[in-house]
Image 1 (spheres, rainbow, N blue to C red):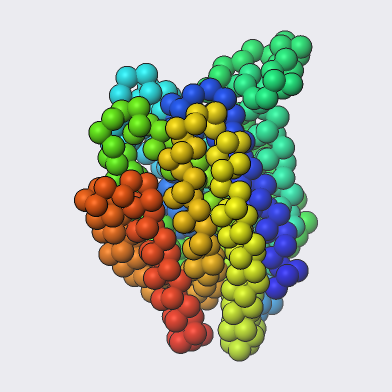
Image 2 (image 1 turned 45 degrees about the vertical axis):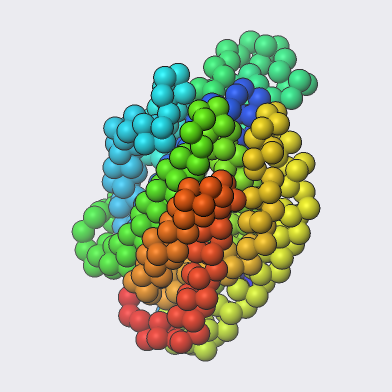
Length: 450
């Protein structure tokens, strides 16, 4: 499990630093810039959830074939995954382009702030035309047990993002600011952050295509196999559609949750500060998703390959081991988030009002990192077996039955502010952790056909 998980953990840390760098640089511009970057992170999460339609089915199908020794069939499934991802990427960018003004309005943003958000989303969103290929290719490679190549590709994306966004934005710590000027590179402020991320994601997608075209790791792109037709494509979609719907439901719930956060104050200045505090907290908490996704993806690979090799008990043991190891990381992060909340907010933003509004809720949220990680790991393990419908039902109950209900009551009705809203979020994670752990322990997924 450790051998499978550690490259994905490194990959997830590198992926995290793409969003972290953007948020960090925006903090040197204004609260409005932080809001733009933070809302783009939510859109990035939407894109990731939609891409689950491809990635979840790809891991399950490729892992089953690989575990059974059917390597040509695994390669055929990888080709279908790339073709599906390309179509999905175009659809996601079209959605972002046309929905950006509506999204800003929904968050009660107006004037220059709204224009800033719309422009940032449209530039940043173009990167999904290529990152969808990275997601699909990485899923196919992980299904074959190859974890290090996606890690190296994301490493390149991260380094490029840090360098290019810094150069094109022209903001950051004082010692950084003269670099662009000395090199004669024009700077674009907030737009430069978006352009830098776009460039990094584009190169990541091209690197993924290059690796798969070479066929060095058992999976090889073939023009004749790049099709939306055939049984491999149907199997990927049959497994992936419920996972994609699950992601869409969770994101829709998060959008409504964000609308609740946007209505926690009637004062526009305070409302902007609350939104910035919330978005910074979510960006930093994304660190917890790193071990969760790393051990979850490792569990999905091990579960899928074990079932393909007719070893269900090995699959069960692998899922539980992934949850245990992920919980150890979550415990460490609980302590870090709780005791370092103040310095974290001071690092991420220059506005004292953002600090005062965010620190206490962030400390409360720190206490719920183990349930968050547990829910993610067991969900991945179930999806690796091809079981995607039951996790979708759990998400529906947790997000709409627990999170939104309690966030509205505690945050708005009882005037609990950001802390009140986050109470609903934390209890949702706890309920989902219990339910998906029970589903995995029950073991009905062992007989799931893909």
